[in-house]
Image 1: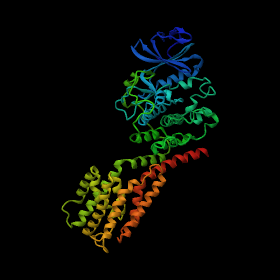
Image 2: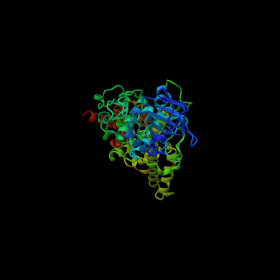
Image 3: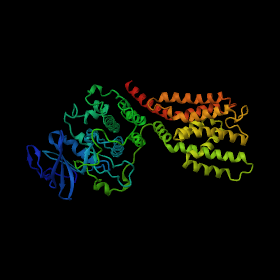
Image 4: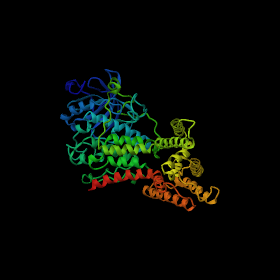
Length: 556
């Protein structure tokens, strides 16, 4: 029964003790109050027993003087439409002369605010919670509901987190968002300076704090600010005045340099002053998911890792019955918002960061190199070149180092063999493996070139392979491959790009100084090597520049 269907005279007058609802009171003729879970500025949360359906619920009792009656029914109806594993289900709502009552599901757990204060969450757990909240808010926005007051005390973390069947990673397993619509039914001046603006100032988007404008981008801003604070321990909006609400926030990596640049850039983007430049919840969710594997899984230093306690908050471990009764596919899916160019850049960045992408390129090159070598060595190949290419590619996909020499042949055919040491450096783990493969790759190119009659990189016409000067070329490739991964500061991407360029030029100069002549594709190979070496730093520069450009635009 909804609030609109429940007449005031059916609420059942609860006994009062000192102005507060008493333990054991029967509310609305069915909810027996059992235990007070907490008292806030505008009401009290109780665990209660639904005597009609024999289940545990939570009852939030809002002080009547703080409730805007005209808004209460409208907001309750909107909140009741939300059926999602990461959102606290609202069962019933009612209002009388003494107060307003919100009956919801009950979960044993703790608030995000309490867990952060105790240092009980790791970076990875924070990102998982962020994913769940992105999905919860996306569902609400698809139903036309704006939260308006996203903050750590409204984020509830169940003590026993389980994945909802049939749903994506992070969905409903890490956190639940509560108090949908409550901010809009409370008009007390303690929340904000006027009764028309709702929310908590420390987590408000600039446009919401200035003129009360609250939309999907305002909820996105509040969520990003929660993640900023959770990861850094600092809320830059806390204690600020209204006049400074439009000031851009300092970049997240200024607080924590050890965080992945993509993660920091994604959160910084969602915190831009201009709503249209924040991207979407989908963008933020994709960033959080992409950075999960890089996130530290060690809880905070204040307390040991939290694995579930007996404290109760206004959440329940499993989705409410309304969600269970719905079809699995009935939940709205995330919709892409923001510019298509932004999504394209995000997708390109994600794909090029994946480990399998580099393996796939290496496997394809090895297959092509094997096919070319078969046709070059035999007039009538004993095996079909296409079949050889497929087999070699599959083997190389499983064992990347197995196809490095053949990848070098493919690069040599197109005049890019000078990039092979950079490829070796990306695939081999130990320095001695890189050194052996670097020298072996050059030997393989020379031998394949002499056998096939093609100059794949360098045919030793002036100096025989036994000449000491030839050994200098082998040493140059071995040394270049061995030291390449060491030329990364991992903190200064522009310097990393310069080191990659210097490494590439130095390799060409060293091989040329040994007497090797002519070198095929000397310049293109050096450029490709620099790209392979500097791709990671280049992406980091791109992401950081994107974030800083948005901040500068906001200032302008």
